[in-house]
Length: 251
Length: 199
Image (cartoon, rainbow over all chains, first blue to last red; front, side, top):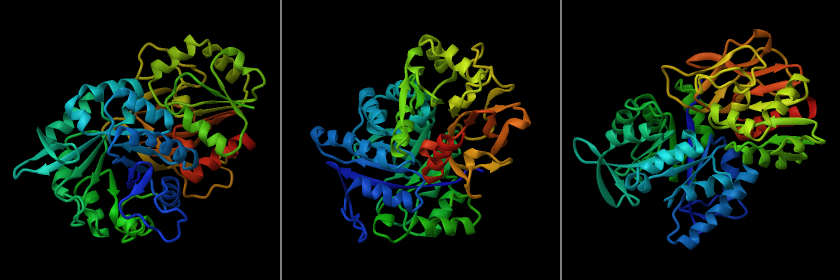
């Protein structure tokens, strides 16, 4: 049986991991390679690096980060943030990323999904959807959750699948950073409408919430950031808990 | 010397990175002459069946690989490199694979496709590839198609994803795995090491 993936997400700015990742036992806090190793040893099933650099100049360092990580850590590696073109994708994949995640660029230029899938395979192309609750529906936002694209999330996710997205990374803007739990209704609505795997993101805070979004939201994978980075949860304890609840995990 | 067949597969670099990490001597095989001095070959692969076969022909590597396998020389097929051993795939109707084993390649039905993630492999017979591995054999899978109709005596490991299907096959010196050892953490590296040292 395929297992549910537990995926730590690391924000990288100008080559350094940022946002509260400060483990006592690491020599160099913020070193992407050290952190990737740390999470790999801890049982992470995959890693996502999100480039939050402000300038193009800083973004160039991401290529070096990916190369360095891919030489040392042998689990799947997805990279997102600031990817605009096929060449951006190619550079990251050639550096050792297994997948690239696109969000704003996918909405502004949906053909990029198709072209990326044709060139590199659907399994390489993750479309990241930032969803905001609009009452009766969710809209897909762009530019890190700043602008409403007007696109309905459910429809957009189906369109992404059709264009060749191999996976949907579904982030709830409303829950992001709140630790109040994943948006189960949102996850379920998207997951039941597409055949590609859905990674639930935004709101992870405790074990129960993880179980709920898997069991009732039909999430194929869960993304965690601060809950792991601040050591509120460890991947081992997450997996132990999920296993006890009857969820298939790798241990 | 290990030769890694380079026909433009997406995961070539990951395989090379893993071999570097394991300090295994290797070289890329881009043309027939590159086979010189090579003792074992790896055919990696993420991508489409049809495209891969086309590229192998274009680079005049198809015949060489076919001969290699027919001579029972050490071969490791990864993912698509496993599927290419069969004659045909639903992914590319009309295009002939290497066809060295009976069976064919079929698309997953009634489940999420591609299968992405870690799946458990049940070992059904002893094999040097999984030498000294424990029972928790989880490997990273990434594929939409699987092989079926494979002779039972070839099957070493089975995975389940809506259907049971071969995840590891072996005959003589020919080994193939449907998952990605180069992305399967410690267990995956161990498998590659075993192949280098024992197969």
